[in-house]
Every structure is written in structure tokens, then in C-alpha cells.
Image 1 (tube, rainbow, N blue to C red):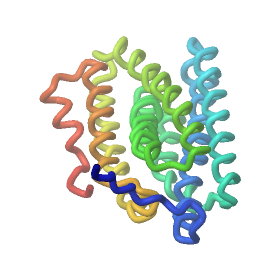
Image 2: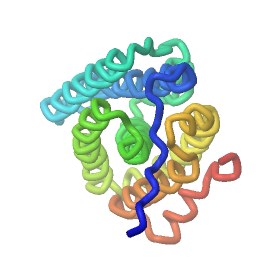
Image 3: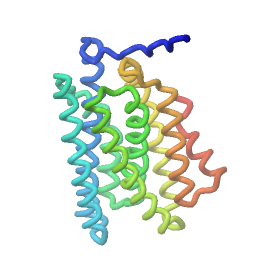
Image 4: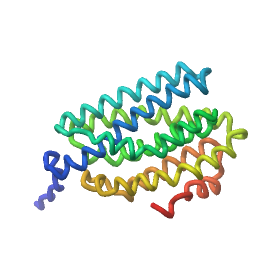
Length: 232
């Protein structure tokens, strides 16, 4: 009876793995920290009528951050937080500008659509190649992220007619940053067993579905999703 060849086992303790993990782990920690901050800012400044729900989302993001901090400690890895802050700097800056200008639609596109979809894609691709401890944490987190994506979708869907033009403009300004970010992290992600093509595909599917759910036609979704792809 033929025996199945065992799949190669990831060496989670190798210096190469830990070096790459220090940056990937920092990115997810920073991403959850900024999401926590973004939802609190929206609750306080632009969406006080949804304050309770936004504060609940912020608290969930804070729990996720602590979970990913535990993942790093489990592998005795110190996350490279300066790298992660720089990684998110442009999206962070664009969110802060939109917040200051009262552009709630742009804020929601950045946080509830782009960042949440980026996270969902990364976590979905990471789960099959993660160590056991991180897999359990990440599986719990990704279920929550769909709730966060849904919050932004539902608000934008309810306000689609007035939000459409700003959504198109915000997409044009911010989606290309995703491809820049994916390129920046491609080598480290590959060390962890995460292929860039799979990340791009998962992101495109989830982001496209979100745009369609909000109210864009299939043709519009294709046009919006293609913006920035040249740099992917």
C-alpha cells in the first residue's frame, strides 16, 4: 500500500522564521491597535449615534491585539513595532486626515473595508501554515473581523447614494496602498508559507464582495478593484 509523502514541516524555531515573524507579528499587532483607535475615534467624533456598537468593535480589536502579542511571546519573538508603524503610516495618515475633515465615508472605507479585508485575507492564508497556538488565536480573530467588515458594509449600503462619489474617490486614493503594502511584506510572508498571489486573490474576492454588497454593480466593482493593481 503506497504511503503518502509527509508535507514539509515549518521550523517555527529557526532564526529565518523568527526574523520574518518579528515583522509579520508586529503588523497584525499594529493593525489591531490602529483599528481599536480608529473605531474609538469614529465613536467620539463622527458617529456618536453608533457609539455603543463602535466601542464594542474597538474592544474586540484590543482583545485581538493582545492575542497576537501572546503569539509572539509563544515563539519568543519580539515584534518589530517601528517597522509596523511605518508599514501602516500612509493608510493611518489618510484616516486621520479624513477624520479631521469629517469624511465618515472615507474613514469607513479605509477601516471597515480596506483594513478589515486586508486582515481577513492575511489571516485566512496564515491559518493553514500557523503554529498550533497562533492558529487557535487567529481562527477566533477572523470570525470577529467579518463582523467589523459587516458594520461598514451595512452603514455604507444604507447611505450608498450620498456616499458613492466619496467611496470612489477614497478607493482611488487608498486601494493602491494595499498593493504597495503587499509588495513590502511579500518576502517575509513567503517565509511563513503565505504566498503573495493567494493573499491578493483572497483580498480581491472579499473586497469585491463588500463593494457589491454596498450597492456597486459588477462592472463598477471590477473598475474599482482594478485601481492600483498595476503595482501588484
